Length: 244
Image (cartoon, rainbow, N blue to C red; front, side, top):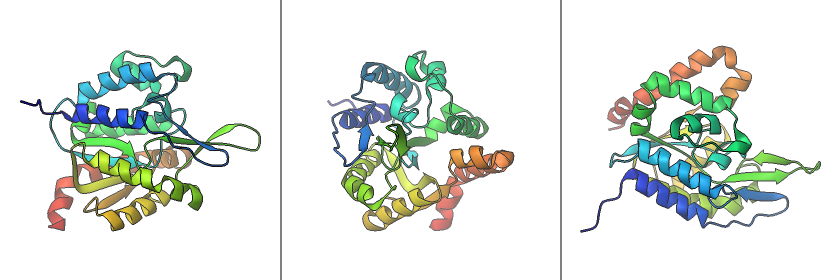
C-alpha cells in the first residue's frame, strides 16, 4: 500500500521540481534558484526541517501569494517570507552569508503572532509567490537589483508559462481554492486576477497591502494594517459563507 503524502512531502517535491527548473531570460535578466545554487545543501536541510515542523499533516491550507522572491530573502532561504535570522531560530541552521532580518518578514511575524502563533498560522496558510523563483537585473552600474515578474511586458510574457505551471503545482499541494490571498494590491493583484480569469484557479482573490509598502512608507499606521491582515485572515469562513 502506498503511504499517503503529507503537505510537507508535497512542498518538498515542489521544491525539487523548482531545483530542476532552468529558465533562460534575456538582456540582463536572470533567475535566482536557491534549490540548485551554491547553498543548495543548506537550503535542503532548512526546508526539510521547517516544513516537517509545521506541515507534516494532511490539512488543506489557503494560499497567500507574493509576487516573486527577493534576492536576499526567500531567493536565499528557500522558504517564502522567512529570512535567515528567523529560520535560524526555527531550525537551528544558519545561512552565514545573509544573516539579516527583513522588515517584511518582521511584519508578517507580527501578523502570525496576533493570529495565534506560527503553528496556528501555518496550519491554516501556505505562503508562496506567483513567480516562485527570484529575478535579478544587472543595472547600468553593474549591480544586481531585485526585479519583479511584472516589470515589463517582455518579462511577463517570458515567465507566463512557468507561472501558470507553478500555480497548478502549488494548488496540487493541498490548497483550498475557495480563497486566495494576494500580497500586493497593485500589479501583482492585477496579473493574478488576469490569470485567474483565464484558468479559474480560485473562487475569490483578496488583496492585501505589501509589508514593504507598509513598513517603508506607512510605518506610523502599522497597527492599522496589522489589524486588517489579521481580521481578513480570520474572516475566511465568513467570506466563504457570503459567497455561497
